[in-house]
Length: 164
Length: 189
Length: 73
Image (cartoon, rainbow over all chains, first blue to last red; front, side):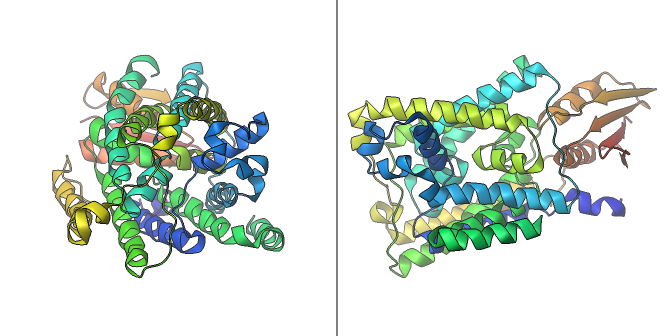
């Protein structure tokens, strides 16, 4: 189906290669590995006005809670949305859509809830903890990866049993 | 659309020049992930679901390239700030929860952002839920001094030495090759 | 016989899971048509069909979604 080639998108490995290079670019630009969920945490803490919490005070991060827009991670997050938006628009794939099954929404919310907590516990998400960890040669990255494998199995089971 | 991003970049450069670089990296990442249809969740889920290891292999390549590139910085002696991590058990537990969550939501944190860029509104809900439990997590962990006291990296070269660390990285590469032979159905790409 | 599966609005991995499930119930010679509006799912479905050895055809619909016709052999 030659006319579909553009729709298929770039090969997975090519994406992986470029993303890996981008992670190094981030390291070069920021002096520390990248991450996504830290930004989320600062924004929600700012919204809730919780800069005095020990979690932030003890780790020296209270300043970011007071002004998360100054935290560069915010711009990294926005950049990802922007880049994806650009890619979708250029390929004619942007379309605002909502799920039609209530169960799909429940699965999504539950999934998001677990991800938020899991990321706090592990100190990051797939981008921050996994790529950031493994790329900075930290054992935690590998342990996080093992956790992801362990979680995918029951996750799939739950999806099939309750949310399909 | 590209014009808007260009203008946005210029504004950011004026207001927060220090953050412009990572904004650009973010743009690049979002674009690459969207175009290549990359999915971290699929990398861990598809081998269990259909025996398809293509995404996993692409992820291994990503990790290898990222680690190799970063290692160059370490070897060059660049002053880098490593992430502060909790104990490995917390990483494992967090990873497991995250694993369940990303399979249920159909996307991990980065992919949630990418999907939003593609127009899937449900990921606003995913994001909202994740924000809420992030706050909960920060609250609970903050009240647990033992957790906060353990935040430090476990830099592999420090206790394995560089040769063994290099070996683990090559292990990544090897795993990629080996997995390409285990692909069920014989389709190799 | 043609069967249709309307999966507009579903995110992965639901399309492949539901398609595989539906495929089980088809008789040889039947065609399963999956409608989806998610480009990533189109790719997943094509990969799945190719891996299972089912001939398939992808049709782009007028409103920007796709219909993937998979035949059971």
